[in-house]
Length: 129
Ligand code: SF4
Image 1 (cartoon, rainbow, N blue to C red):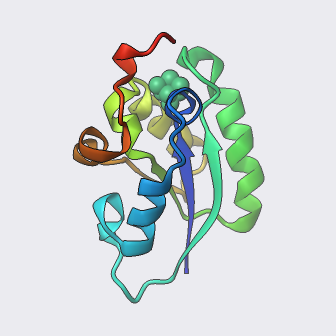
Image 2 (cartoon, rainbow, N blue to C red):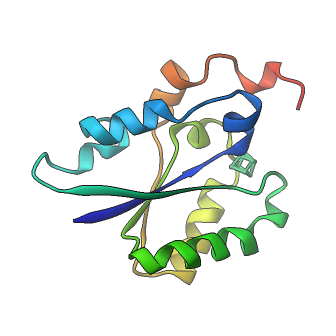
């Protein structure tokens, strides 16, 4: 059993109204960033967390506390949503932060190609943030 948490970007979920359904679909079908799992592996989505928002300086403590709470369910991997690969300049900082605090948890970055092609219908650059 691999326990998975999805880490999303509130700019995309809140501002663009993304329901994360493309990421859920990839998880279910083991495509995109989830193709690392074979069809025999049992995957369990145990939670969703999101970034407290830009700028990243405000984020670290809340991210750590969210993961600390979820880790009572034994988090194995945290998948960053595909959209973060497109929009988040801080995604590798977050990876270093999380892996430093929770060495047992592996971070999997989302796929840029998937975000660019499907799940973000209207680029954030056209949105008034
Ligand atoms: S820091 Fe990254 S994940 Fe957080 S709101 Fe900004 S772009 Fe999204």
